[in-house]
Amino acid sequence: MIITSPQNPRMQLVRALLTRRAERDSSRTFVIEGVRLAEEALSANWTAHLVLTSSQLSERGREVAAGFAAGGAEVVEVEPRLLEALSGTESPQGILAVMQRTDLPPPAPANFIVVADGIRDPGNLGTLLRTCNAAGVQAVFLTPGTVDAFSPKVVRAGMGAHFRLPIHSLDWKKIIRFCRVDSHPPLRLLLAEAAEGTSLWQADLRAPLALVIGGEAEGASPEALSAVDGCVAIPMPGKSESLNAAVAAAILLFEVVRQRTS
Image 1 (cartoon, helix red, strand yellow):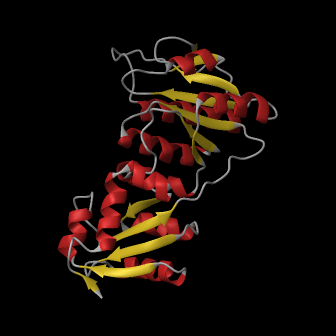
Image 2: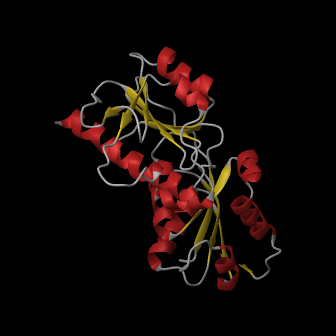
């Protein structure tokens, strides 16, 4: 069977998941696109319910689709023009997959957590997740007001981090409980702050910590400011007032790595 109509129920399902957070939340599914992301999901043993392919799909991509089919996914071919209409990229690769969300648990004990506080830009959050995965962060907590981590742009920018990194949406009450009550030893909550705080180069980041990264426009929320134990700043001798949230996080995270491995 080849899907030839945009009104096909499978096409409507994928379109709804791509455009509506409520649909993703209620079904606990989301969409991935591209061969590399599909490979990452397959190698991490995440479950695909539906895989849409086109005749443009490479042999490498067909092997991935076959892997999902072996795991029970429905694999359906779609006319290239229809799959391109769903694509969020300039050069579609001919594969979309509907994935079941898997809630990876935070580790116990934890010693390296990131809190994304009100980050609203999908590209920034996706890049942050990718960087956290590379730096060995054990889990990322998303506060209310943060963009949906499973939206298409975030998933695309995450480059597979979603399949390896525990990602949880929590309110500040639960975050504080995790850091100060459930974690042994407790995690120190540190806020990345552009203007104030201990210089990154002087701060001791070897002890268990949760690093809070505030949003791009408004910075950290009042809840974050009242919860943290201190602030850490990146020295900036230039004239810029602040850094992109994901860039700032990368500098801070790899300073943690440096201190803990040196």
